[in-house]
Image 1 (cartoon, rainbow, N blue to C red):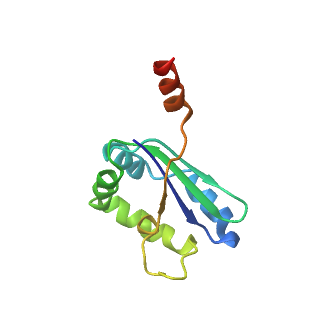
Image 2 (cartoon, rainbow, N blue to C red):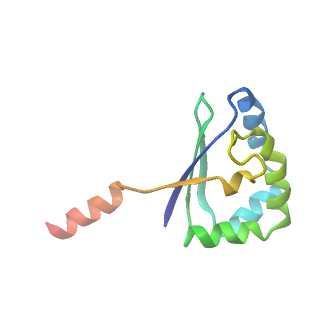
Length: 117
């Protein structure tokens, strides 16, 4: 399954967000991989818009596996001050992801077109 989510980084803290993501803790990287997060990327706009994309067997299960790790709790605490979440300031960043609905995928459409030809 492909999963995409959005969040928001405080614009004045984008530089710090980039710095921290230039060298993510190896323990965190291994935890994400062990939890089933594959082909995981983050995209950041100049206004703080953050888009995440990953592939996994089950996004809810992959998130739940990360929630059980100590390293994720530490990482979320480190990152929390960088996010723009005025409605829920005490919420961990990964709990505030807004999951987006996939409405188009080129490979899926090409495969469907090939079978109907």
